[in-house]
Length: 80
Image (tube, rainbow, N blue to C red):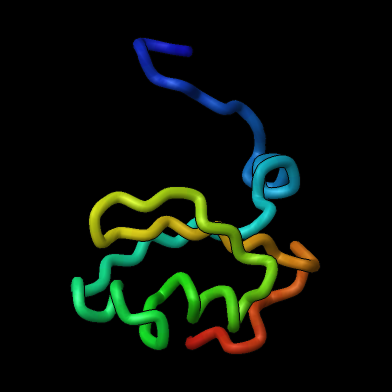
């Protein structure tokens, strides 16, 4: 801890290899969509990325962690 902040030291490549094991996604939905199972983002993410894990919900915001099966592989459906 430096000046009250957590700091991680290392090269970008080291930090990626040590800590970069997926993505954390925070998504906010309308109340109607959040309460509807068919349009709920948590249900949608689990169907698209089965290894995704719900980390936290607060109100209408869901925080989902999607762990990459192969951390070195790029996402198949990435938009450029």
